[in-house]
Length: 376
Image (tube, rainbow, N blue to C red):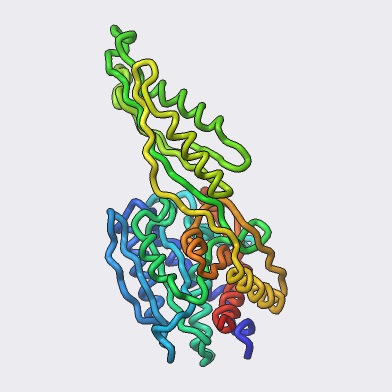
């Protein structure tokens, strides 16, 4: 039996995925993410994997590494790399409950990326049940901090990927169902304006508003956006009393750059804005950065194999480079053959309409099974 013909069942997969979706796991809630890791660890152990729990660092939840039995255990093999944190705070289930209707399944994190992770787990379950052996050892690594740039586990991912024959990331499929074979750079920056406080009612002129200064800086920064390097301010924190001129304001910027040269120019331009203006000091601090990942021969060979498998299943797998960083930036930039965004199809990730096409669960499990049993 070909691995793509294994008896994957959509209803059974939805039943198994539901507890994952209903175990809310926002990045900044370490305990919640750890609960999700424990659930995934249980499911991986039940299908025969040896699971190692890796303690969290920097305030994030745990990670898990699951190794499946193999005669060549310890030799270069396949790493399935995924994250189990989501952008949805605990309580989102009240507004976005798990439900299945009209060929779609809804829920927080179901598309990004619990659905894809579960499809790959199901692939290993069915491979084992059929008595098949993958040509190479297979390891799953699930991490807790991807949605905030992977500040705590980048080293863990790079260590796990180093020397592997392939890295597979079940991130959501592209809008046309395609895979990702390269990604643009993603850089994060922390902004700080420091003004002078005063009473907003009777001494307004004595103050220098950090909020007003930040508002002007935001317009200036976002106006720097081009097709090749974008800037977006997504977080602002300031103020406690409306009758006080604010003395500090903090914000966070996300920048996307298509090439390293674009990134270098963007970083330089943003850092050059620092300094005082009208009595308010402006400081830019560079945060975590995902490197540019450009397609390389090993990745292209991996994609060619995936396209053969998809054709056998009955669809054409397109591919291209993409914005929106993932942990594939790290492994791809290392030169390890990496195939990204081969998880489920859907829409609305990071919104209250997040959903997947239920048919894509079995489609992607078949793709996973085909890859896991054919990569050599």
